Picture 1 (cartoon, helix red, strand yellow):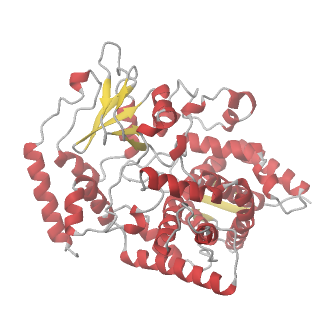
Picture 2 (picture 1 turned 135 degrees about the horizontal axis):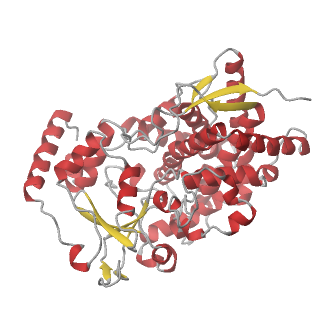
Picture 3 (picture 1 turned 45 degrees about the horizontal axis):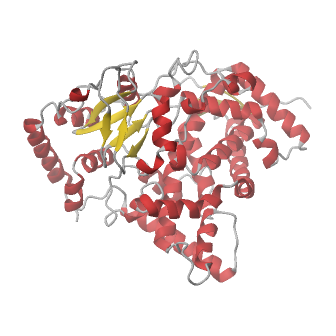
Length: 510
C-alpha cells in the first residue's frame, strides 16, 4: 500500500499529539529504586530525532553516567521502558551464562512486508535463529577466511592502485567515508554475492548505488524508521516499507541468477552463496534446514547491510588515528615493510593475520570508536536482576522486556581503561593486553549472538590498511575538523564535517 508523505506526516503528528496528551511520567522504575532518566513527552523525543538534535552517542553516555554507582539504569525509548546495563557481571550473566533468557534481538519490521530484512540472521528468533546460525557459522571459519583473502586482496590492490594514480594526477584529498565504503562494497560483492565490481573506476554501478540507498537512515528514511519503532502495528496496517522495493528486487534477482549460472556451468567460488547452495544437498530425511532463494537472499543481504557501512566506518576511524598520530603510522609501516620483505612483496593470509601491531591498531580503534554504540537483548523468559543500588529491590525483567548493552560507554569508562579518550594501540600488546578485562571489550557484541561476521570485518580492514599504508602516506586533510569530534546531529557514528584524508604515494628507498 502506497501512502503520500503528506498524509503520513499528518497521521504522525496526530498520533504524537494524542500520545503527548495522555502520556504521563511512569513510576515504573521509581518503585524499585532504580536510578532512571526522567521521560519526556513523545512529542519531544520524536522532535529531537527529526530535527537532528539528538545524538545516539551523547544519549548513551548521558544515560550510562546518570548514576555511576548503579548496576543498571532505567530510561525510556519513546514510551518503552528500557534497562541499560552498567555492571560487567550482569552483562556476562545476560549474554553468556543465562543466554537462554535473552536469545532474541528486538524487531521492528513485519516479516510479510519486509521478508528480506525480517528473515535474516540478525532478525530471526529462537530455534529459527539457532538453525540458521549453525548453518552459516562454517562460512566464517579460518579456512573460509583464508579462501576469501585472495578476493579481498584483489579489491584492496585495485583500490589502492586507483588512489595512487589519482594522487599522482594531483588529487590528494579524499573523502574517507566515500572511498572506504566503495572498498567494502566491492569486497562484500565478491565474497558474499560472487560478483566483481570496481566502485572506484565505476562509481555508479548498481550494486553500490542500491547499497548506499538501503543503508541510508537520514531524512525520510529516518522518519519511517522512527514511525516503525513507535507505531509498529500502524506501520504494518499502512503497508509502510522501510526498504526500497528496487533494492529488494535487485538482490533477489542477483542471488537467483548467480545460483542458476553456477548450477549450469559447475562454477565454484569460496563465498557465502556457495555455502548456502550446499544446503540443498542434504541426505533425504535430514533435519538440517534447506534454504530457499528468498532465504539465501535474506542472509546475503544482512551480511551486506551489516558490513557495508559499519566496516567502512571502522576504517575511517582507524585511518584517521593513524594519519593523526605519526608515530603510530611510522611503526605500522615498519611492520608492513618487514612483512613485504619476508613475503617477497606478496603478503600471505598467515603473514597479515599474524601482524601484532596492525591488529592492535584496529582493536584500539574498535575500543575507542565501536561503530555500534550499543546492542540490545530481549528477555525471552522472566529473569531477576539484583538490586540496581544498595537498599533497592531486585527487579524482574518480564518476557518481552529489552535491555541495552552500551559498549561505547563501557569502552570509555576510566575504571576499565586508563586515559580512555587517548588512542593507544599498546593497550592491546604485551602486558597491556593481559590487563584488559575481556568483559569490558565487546565491539562485535558478546555471547552466542555476537556478530557472526567479525572475523570477516577484521580481515577486510587489515587487508585494506596493509595495502594502503604499504603504498601511501596519509595525514588529515585540510577539510578535516581537528580535533575530531563525533557529529552530534547524525544518527550514524561519524565525524563532524566528515572524514577527510590527504593521501600521497610513498617514496621507499630500495
